[in-house]
Image (tube, rainbow, N blue to C red; front, side):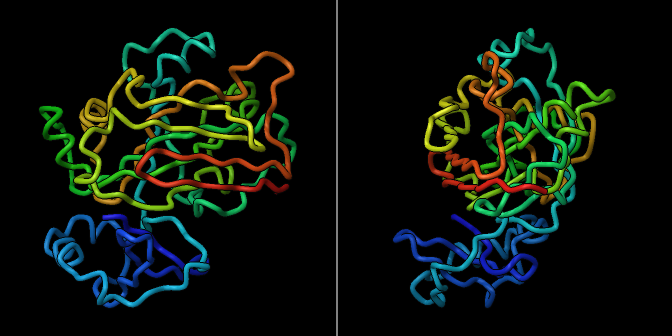
Length: 283
């Protein structure tokens, strides 16, 4: 299934994208798309069994919001692609590099992204997001880890590199500015993605292709990332994991690096998971 949420910010309604690309209203079946729904096998089965043609059609011009609400935490993996580690001059890490993003950084896939005040190094990062569907702690195998995955989505891990690298402390300063995690358009259930390590992902800035990679290049694949994290924190339904970005970010380019400015347009896509488009503005 391709699940999404449409409507004004803060008042989205749950929806389903049918096989013909028509947006169908799910509010008669479920109150929203959140961790509680993802953990409820019976509710998901009712949605899956519903005849899409019997569901009300929603206006295709409605804003698309984040496909998930009530996110508990966003756990991010840094330097998780061989080519991205190489372009930044870093050695491939021996263990996953872990940092956090606040859930309030999440916006819809086409919402405005704000360049922070004083920023000169706002950067782009297309990422595969993993959405957890059942409580997981101390996973013993990759199979157990993947069984806890409810689905996948496109994430844009927007980053401010000066704040992240040059201002002291951990990476969080450069990762948690408002609007720094567009998510969606869809939450695609795991049954539609048989191999999360076979997904092309791309990003364009002002029409120029900047990132063109594949999840096959991940240093730590999705199953290992989920297993690994479950040994350091409990993963709950509705938690999100951003699994890293391939080469092509502004940070990895020679000077003068083409960091983002107000007025720039960023588009990103992952095969099977949809496409995002953001126009940047000043905070």
